[in-house]
Image (cartoon, rainbow, N blue to C red; front, side, top):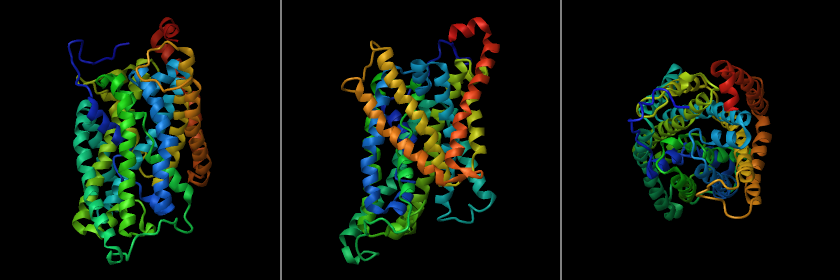
Amino acid sequence: MESAGTGGPGTRTRKLRLFPLLAATYFMVSGGPYDLEDIIGYAGYGHALLLLLLLPFVWSFPTALMLGELSAAVPAEGGFYAWVRRAMGPFWGFQEAWLSLASSVFDMAIYPTTFVLYLERIAPNVTRGHGAIVLELSIVVGAVLWNLRGAAAVGEGSVKLWIVSISPYVVLVGIAVYIGFQGMHGPFGGHASLARPVGRDFSTAVLVAMWNYMGWDNATTVANEVENPQRNYPRVILLAVVMIMMTYAIPIAAVAWAGIPASRFSTGAWVDAAHVLGGPVLAFVVVVAGVIDDFGTFSNLTLSYTRLPHALAEDGFLPAVFTKKLRNGSPWVAVLACGACWALALGFSFERLITIDLVLWGLSLILEFVALIVLRRKEPTLLRPFRIPGPDWVPVLLGLCPAALTLYALYASRTETVAGMSALKFALIIAVMGLPLYLVAKLSRRDRLGETDHERIE
């Protein structure tokens, strides 16, 4: 089914190349050391470093291998939605899309929230009252406008944003290492303790660490807008895992070496650390870089999530208006609609947003691993330019660790409350809503396409 408003067969849309795709993936998952502070504050330096260095081997690398095989074998727009639909049919494909779009509402509210938390460290008067909402909405509006320029514009611009957002941490790490070598002459009289702070909830640190390593599948939804996706996706995903591990571990080790106590860390505390180590100028630069980071992450996730309504509309599950694109390939109706929905979700606390986001995204991740296993059995001759090494039981083994961690997130979410109920119950209610929504979408599709076309698509 051809999208409306694509500009015709003569139109050539600029595509994402290797490095812009790598920068986009980096922002979709991480963006930098920002938002790691709660891991340090709740777990201490020693446990934080262990979490951030070991978690990728049971959470990120298995996911990256799964995504590498599926994105190379089925490089379709909609990414994970297309894989699950192909493996298990339209019902489960719809559930995958619903879980991802539902989690996006809470995921996308995190970045404007942390933007305000960073900014209030140096300009508290600006972030009070309605000022906070105005600032958060500015992130949403800016990202929407940038995405209307197309995927290539966002990806290429993200390379520059990454360099700017990470540069203050190069300076901070250098100063921290120098101060650490001063030993007892440092601002805190020696290196910081690696022990976990007393009375802190370690499970919160685990959940925040998991959240900082999630989102690897987001870049796959723009496969039609990527140059040579079969080759570039596996390379980008595996390379991004290593980059992000280094981005997280090096600054944390450096500030521990400098002697800043772990108890001083909470969301936005990198600004305080920069002020202690480098003075007000470095603190100001970290805030500016944090703002750029949040904007870059929000913009790249907008690039990802807005392709799902477009793919659903092409399959008839949403009105055809969502298939409309600008000449640069941007699905402008989906971009505007998603931006409006995300703006309505602003206002939750950081920890509650992470909990709900993790539960919903974790459930969608399990469906992706199931799709990998089913496609191995259902289509053994499917061309797989990248294939997970080993026999067919290896993907099953790889999927067990992310599934176990998702179950842990489900268990831990029982302690957070949202709308008078546990975050677990709240998230599961949202997840189950995908069943009646599918029935409504299926009936609407039958009415729009007619019985003959409906049976053909089924």
